[in-house]
Length: 164
Image 1 (tube, rainbow, N blue to C red):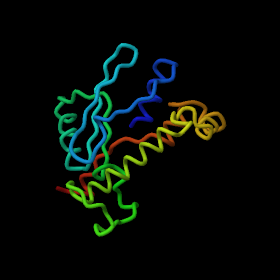
Image 2: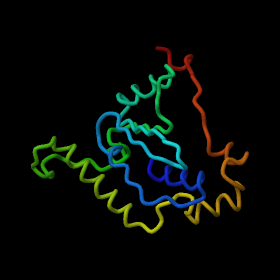
Image 3: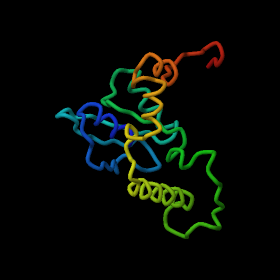
Image 4: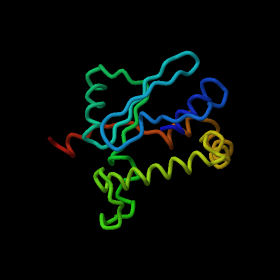
């Protein structure tokens, strides 16, 4: 989410955003919220960790009551850091802390990744040389017809395949 917001800021202002840390949106449980300003416009941001919590945000969208301008839904609690592709760690190898042991491990893993991200010289997606080359040589520009065709998707209800 943070990289997407940095790129959105650049797109809207043609300036680079100061380092942004959305600490209120980090964590393993629930729906997290943050607010940022871009060009004097306040943007409300939400992040749902896990599909159970995503339902809260999706119901708000469906009912027309969502106050959010940008929403990230992470299918796994804590996001990909806790996804099925990550190594499984047996509790016997984890530190003994007051928190639930597995959550503590996942939080520590996430903290390390955030620290690594802060050290990276390239933290803005729109400055990635590979992405720039892809747009220059193949997609032409963001939101071009080819980019829309190949990179964008939309939700299609398939009730006949997945009845209630």
